[in-house]
Amino acid sequence: MSEDDQPVENTVLSGPGEPEKPAERYQLGLCLSGGGYRAMLFHAGSLARLNEAGLLAKLDMISSVSGGSIASGLLAYVWPRLIFENEVAVNFKTEYLNRILAFSQVFADGSEADGASKFQLQYCL
Image 1 (cartoon, rainbow, N blue to C red):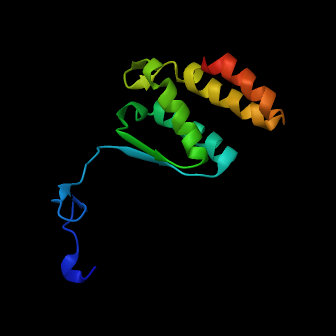
Image 2: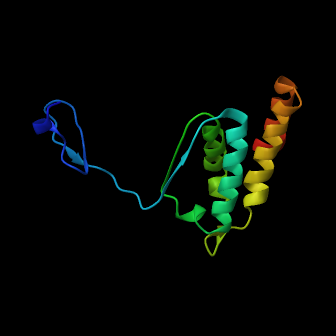
């Protein structure tokens, strides 16, 4: 792409022959990085703090990879059950933190196969 072909700011590149579309804008987004088990637990703590600060309810978008995707996937799963009062999910600990901590124990004790089944029956269904 030459200098003359640079896209206009705030546009999304489209395929050949398609008009350029304006980029979507979000007020507040969150990116959760990878790093496996440790990232999952780190992000769980970060999400808890965002909730305490009243920012969790204001998120428009979350992007994640690897361990961050475990944390964000569980958040997406429990989101419909979160009860927000004054922009704080008052049941965040029971709906999210307790579940992700239980999930972390499945892998910490070395019983992945049996533990995963128990976790799914006890916390997800």
